[in-house]
Image (cartoon, rainbow, N blue to C red; front, side, top):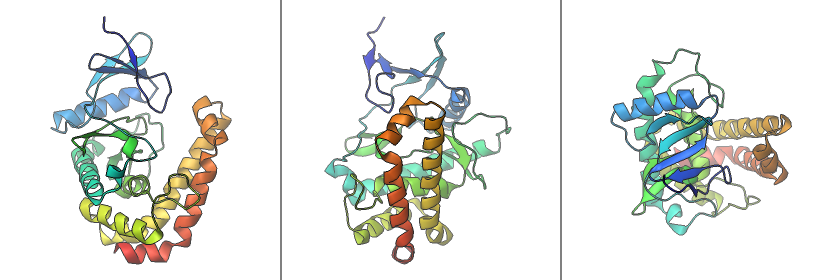
Length: 260
């Protein structure tokens, strides 16, 4: 039997690696996620984990996606324009590959996050640098689909812009650039994705709405006894997101003008 190696990630000490397989705690939505991952792979989109089922201890088994993922503070390579372009194109390919699955939804699926109307794609829900693996400095794989849920493409796009630019307020520890530079980078991402004019005009409000949903989810989970989310709230994450929301909305007109 292969030795289990503990991997770094959002659930400290709970994600293991055995050979080329990853073993993670399963949730009630994991079964539906596995169905979707299998669909993507059958469609020829191989930049995701291969699902291998579940253990008797209610753990999910997935293939280890090659490459390296990074968390904040981001290395300089993540702040380059080319990284924005490649990450946006990978998100676009993922959305296109999963679009057919929308028509297969029964409505009885379980997801961690609620369905958002209008349903256009299967939102990854957390398309961020820490969930994308790099090979030779280029985005290659997408991991951690716990936040998968049906929704509009823009719902996924705005969170990606927030994370990859990153579009944060000066009060955020992960703030890197001036507003003008953030706007310039956001436009690069949107251009590479092929975002429509309508999506660009809605971006600031939708980004604020997406972050508000995140804060609401975090606090509700913390209040219900989820230790991971309680720790996030105690560490001040919710306050940081609220600060970012205020920053984005206060600069809405400048953002829209700059990304058209």
